[in-house]
Image 1 (cartoon, rainbow, N blue to C red):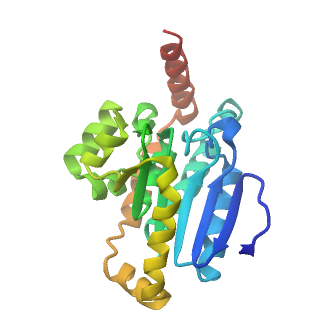
Image 2: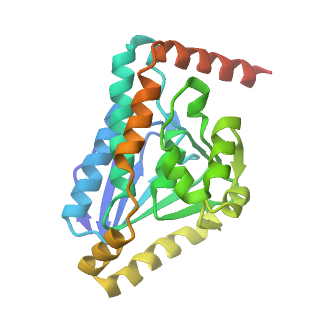
Length: 251
């Protein structure tokens, strides 16, 4: 197994063509901090350069990813937050456009930017009992909605985002947000089996197939994000959203 340097908030592995990027902040529900987003971007680029045929995104602990890390939002300006969201969007689009096979393993809560990362991947495996939600519209942010539409269709995407629906793994599979719903003990065999089959193609053919089937709308995605995030009062909208969520959890 090829060894990579230990990052602060993720773990990275490469073995027999299968790369893994493991979100490693379980005490924070693997929420995406700015450092984690940067490390995920660097890790993905490193695995591609090292010749990985597939990359699996996984999470340590109970949850895959519970969205943005908003713990320091009261210390941020609107401009700080806008930059943070642009960096997340750029990373998500690099996953969506990758010339290798991307795999997400969703477990526990898969929320917000974590759900966007899940939706950006080619193979989307949900562990039984996991749930999925896209609450960004609750604080006026449009992030990843076009990618979600490419997976589940326009009507489903609009309903999920505008109504703030929380989907079970089975509901997510019924609209093709997930490609598989599996027991946790079955996931390792599925992930390694995918890459075993990719070995038969080789990296050059795989990249050509992915390029031929690409339907990138990068500029549209980024423009939608920036327009929504650039509206005055982004920080205050997020703080208001956090307050509503906290109040709801107490009832």
